[in-house]
Length: 169
Image (cartoon, rainbow, N blue to C red):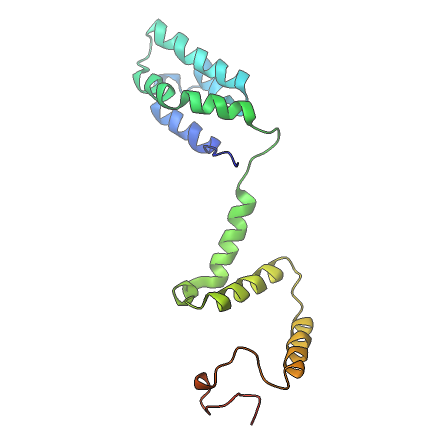
């Protein structure tokens, strides 16, 4: 079963919004601990302890921060335990999705024919993987039509302006 992860970047941004400005300085223990907090249990504990210590001292108002930790802290702590080593960037996925968006463009509303859409997306995938070869596809289509006796498969006579298959003149 896949695990649902909260975005580490969004976690940090959410926490930053809950912190008072007085602790948002490079020398403050909370700010130093926040940088790597969501990537390991030890770092997360260090951050939570820094927040708890500061809240007990009372120098800064940390009500929002402590409420955030109460609401999300356990979930983040569990996520830290199962986080694999290395980067967890979604940049590669976003790049591919952006490319698909550019290729589809305004055509997305016209994808009512699922079979055609599936074939188009398959071709886009092959092209993006640099596996698409126009010559190979053309040869495959020619062979398919030849084996079908010159009749294109899945073409309906009413769809043709002449009322007959296009390959029969």
